[in-house]
Length: 375
Image (tube, rainbow, N blue to C red; front, side, top):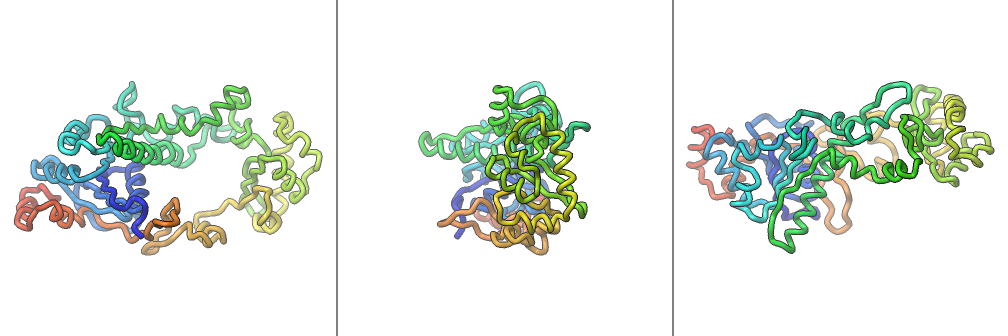
């Protein structure tokens, strides 16, 4: 039970953010992922993105270290890197150099701004990439500035997921052509690609410019979060009329609201009214009413609650490895399930194992250590 990506060989250039998650998700599903690290370091059980991966520590400024990296790449299916444009070329590991030794290599490049364009060489983070998509400007309260949705939307939604999608699509194409290619995965491209529904509504005049004024941004009284009597919160989201009808009945809201649920003119007053209603009971008292219904109400859980919620517990959504809470591998497969992850390894811990598999002998490895090629 090694997972559906068993046999896939992937090289990950050590970095931060989207690339490590992409590598982790593919390792979770059985891919052999070798991280090329800059230096050896102690293991860190909290570095969840390293789980399931091998690591070699190479000095890429050393000819022998660079040659070792090239040998690893020559036997791999995919390489992923998250440096600024041109960095891999300066290291001698750009697409042209890698394709010269491995014509079938899928070369995945992960950046915020993309490989070209006016901002390509500029620093940035999730919040910056998200702001250029229009999405960040739509998130938050009407009476304040936009609120960043952690770093989920650009780094991981528009970043990691599109990198994985891109390299696996290119791998599928390689089955026909026999040729590798470069995948330019940019967060400023990925986030807009997820916004098709919003773009449709904009075109139809069904989405306005203001925050907290639209169907999915907290403007609708039936699609937002409400504070409860105990200072906790509920997420309320019955968009469909039949589900909204259940909310109205179970929460004791006015039955007349069912007739004009989607009239934005009614929303400001109803948000205030619904806030008063939900503040009358504690979160758990409300959940005793809504649990198992189609009213589309769920508790807003704290970090220390999520793994114990009955649904999460039943599915094993969260697990602990060496005491560190983390997500179980996803998605799930009926014939080739992923193995449960172990403790993340240390940077550089697999250097000898990986290089021995490439034909290096003990004497050569010792010589490379003396010259600083292995770090």
